[in-house]
Length: 370
Image 1 (cartoon, rainbow, N blue to C red):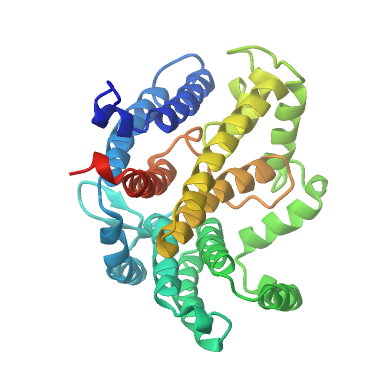
Image 2 (tube, rainbow, N blue to C red; image 1 turned 90 degrees about the horizontal axis):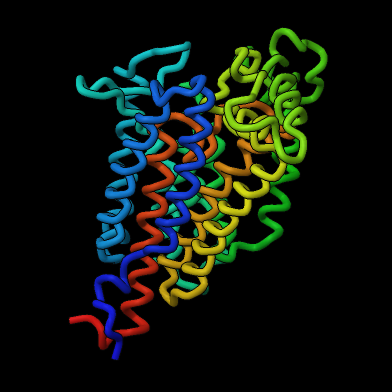
């Protein structure tokens, strides 16, 4: 018989400790990016982490059945909000992405990132196993993914649209759809890329062209990528030292506290800091995938794996973007980039995975529950 109180053994100490370590590192980087000041970024980031961590813990106490029951209603609610964005949404920086609630600016597309995983997972969990290779297993999921993807794309928000598409398609793949479907879709996508390129906004076309040849406009559209590469490369193995980054402190590196925060970090902490940060994220991914592998419930398995890959896409796309391996699409680095939207989304994912982990513990130790 354990002498440790049961509520303490159920508390997700390890994963919260890991997230706290990443967030504290991110706060240090933001402190440095502000020239050695806790304002305006570091303090706000720390407060947001505390609030969203509490939210994740609340989510972790919700029974898994509730997530399954409300997956479709939540999807419908956010989809309606996306339609409202087109009708009454506020415009800022040439994009129409927010609904003004008076006390805050709501960006519904952020909520669709985890909810699309829940909705598609719910669909496949209810689908009989014998129909998984039929057309009826494909078109409803494509509709579920395609509607929010199209609405977000016209805002325009290519980064968020990409995340919604990636999350939904990942669940389709994990559900066991034929591999030939994804190969065929990939080939079809490759064929229509030239046509789709003509429908992109001018700034989006420039991002793609600059990705292919960043040196063609080093002082214009390619400036972000060029300066990011310089900052990362100048950090070397051990970095220039805390508060010693010249690219960010002299304002050569644009968005050094948001999308390109990894470049700010790498300049001061070097390759060692970068590998340490990537290793921490790998531990987070490992935890999420282990939760998915331990559950016997089909819905829970798809959700845990899907939400883990959603967080993975955040990290992978951002790192590829700042290193010049992908076009700049405005994907922040979780817990590092300044801003509340991405942290809220990631903590929603973490909270739901915690709920699944708690459900696994309950199933494996039924005697410990009343």
